[in-house]
Each structure stands twice: as C-alpha cells, then as structure tokens.
Image 1: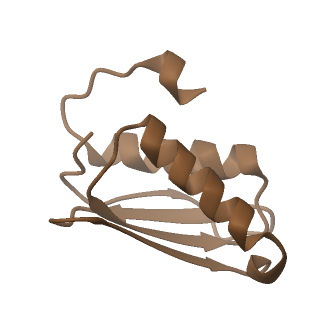
Image 2: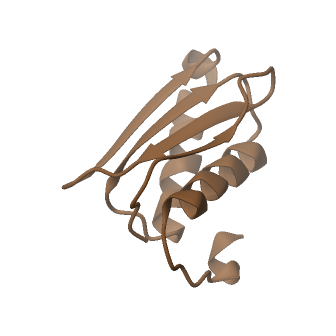
Length: 97
C-alpha cells in the first residue's frame, strides 16, 4: 500500500495511542514515543513492524505517541491510520489479522 496523504487515528488518553501517517519518498521512517518504552519498546516496535509488513507498507513517515496501549490497540490504530492514508485500496482482510 502506498501512503498518499496524511492521516490520524487514536487519542492521547491513557491506554491508547495516537498514530500519525504521512507520505514520504524512499524508505519507511518510524518514530515511537512511549511512556513505557523502556519496558515495552521492543514489543511495540515489533507489533508496528509486523503490522506494516502485513499491510505491505514500504514507504512513509509513521509517528506513534503511545500512552500504554495493548498490542491489539496498537495494531488497530495503525491499520486505521494507514487505511485512511491510502487511495483506492482493495483490502485483504485475512492479512490484517
């Protein structure tokens, strides 16, 4: 999927996260800011990378402001932001599980 416009998903309330997605040429740039990064940073990054890989996102600027969200919330917010940022997408729902 190619990110063609900016999009947001989520909130900055406790146990949630805000995902900001924007187009970028070249490579995938992921910025993660989290209150629990020292404890769960590797797991957060793993969930983000796995979700983007399943969605076949290879370019873009992704900023995540985490407030202690669970893996399922991270996945859902990231999927929502990416789907809002692409045009004319045919969704493979099986791949998003």
